[in-house]
Image (cartoon, rainbow, N blue to C red):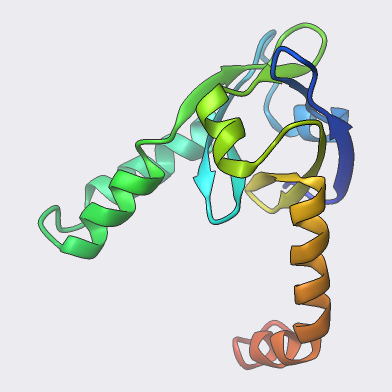
Amino acid sequence: MFRGRFEHAIDDKGRLAVPARFRSELGGQEEPTVVITNFERCLVGYPLDEWERLENRLATLPQFDPKIIAFQRYFISGAAECQIDKAGRILIPATLRQYAGLSRDCVLVGNLNRFEIWAAETWGQEFDALSSRFQSITESMHSLGVGL
């Protein structure tokens, strides 16, 4: 599982170091693959096997439902397979960097079976907003059987 927050910087070529903790979750391949796509105001990264499971689940949904079509167009169309190089970096395509406003400082955020890549400033805003609502979020989670 992916957990924790890590601050890293994107270099001038669009490469971003993936934290060692996250790389270990991506498998023991020499150059593991991460599938990166757009999601809300950030990017989300999936190990290739987890991404393939998600694609298989999506393929079983009604393919003529307008909401499903819209979701797939948005989420799947942005997907890019990114190899982790020997230095532990991924090259994030320019279109995805632009979408998430990634220019230099980033925060990689663990989120169970995936991780998110945020522009540091945008993550700060998101985290502040979540902090102000955390009590009500916790109550909602409790109603789902997730007690802290």
